[in-house]
Length: 150
Image 1: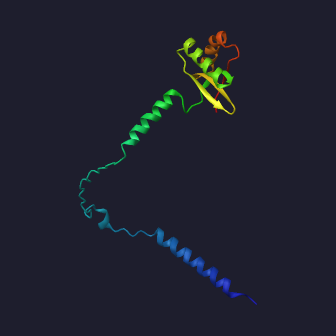
Image 2: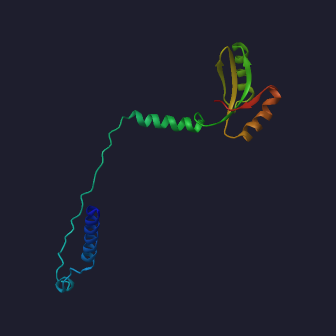
Image 3: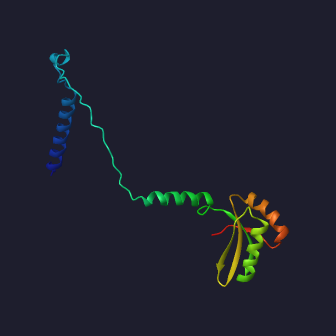
């Protein structure tokens, strides 16, 4: 036997498709639409200007200034330093004092790493700058070396 349900469904789908295609191709415009007398005038009004008020804590400005200062000093970026000494605190203080007298153009700091202290010199943007400084430093501190702090 012939199954009639799919046949009826296919036929109705085909007829609906043809009817929609014919409806799209027919023109619904009349000659009165084309004469140009059916325009509706539109008036535009100016939009009001928006105003934004920002209320912020005055300490934000202080923090932004502090951050920009730290950026300039290289606190956040990859910089090179020269390590002069690694050992006990008394010797580290003497080496730091000596480095400040010998090389006043560069900052020297003491860092503590269990159980010893490190003396670091300078804050160099490039490896080339650090190499140039190390050349001068080797005259006074022959065991000095360049590194990038973590």
